[in-house]
Length: 71
Image 1 (cartoon, rainbow, N blue to C red):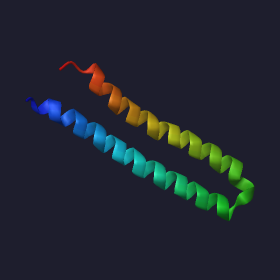
Image 2: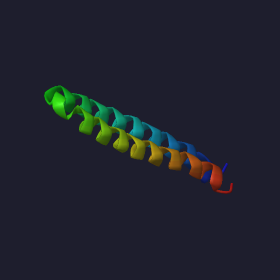
Image 3: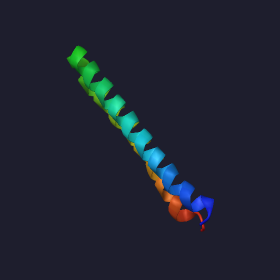
């Protein structure tokens, strides 16, 4: 078994774990900010959704590379 066959699943797993931790922290901080300043909830929510989309995009890129790289 080639080392690369083992490293790709580990890399995707690390990307997924990092994404989950990052999303949890981002959403938690946004909820806390909305609780402190309810009048700014719309702006905070918009920024949180854009940030979450970027975090998820990086995870999807990590997953796609596994399928694109020849074995």
